[in-house]
Length: 275
Image (cartoon, rainbow, N blue to C red; front, side, top):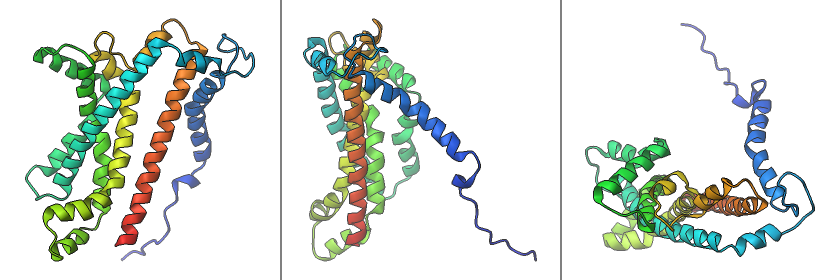
């Protein structure tokens, strides 16, 4: 019998060159964004020539009627699609996480999350073909339907993850105290699950707000969203106004994703302390 080695495996951080590669990846990823944010405050119209600090491009962007319509469309689509996608994702998570086991549950789980792994252009073409077969005219409604379907897995994952960390004994204790299934769901399951629902809704909102490929394919005349508006303006060249719009979108996305993370973490601590 050989001597078993109890040597502790090396952490990936200890490998030579790990820090350099990590720093290079972060540099490539974030420096272009920092440059975009920096030149959004440029007083000079030339994008790459600094002419002093100014908010004029933010003011100009805010008074642009085309931009206002696109922003309103984006918010309308994101709010409705997020609400519908979160409701469907919550029901799916409860069915797979708390409901009776059924044949094909694993396949159902993979099916719900499949849009995360598929190229977005394939989903966009398939969705457009579906609307054509159904005889639906492209409009804001088709964007809402497409975004709802696309956002379901983004809302489902945090909710399902939250559900898996919840102790089922709490619901059993509520039943032992003569709570009906609806009362156990309302007073035990739903309050504990709420941080996951909020985190999933925030992620779905960000995904809907920033989506371009699917929106560009299924948008009708006059129903373009903010990312589509930015793309059409880019055909005329990058301007400080585009930098200002992109900076606002970036700030909203960072705030919502960060809030989603902190809400999820706070919920996990609540579950651990309640058990």
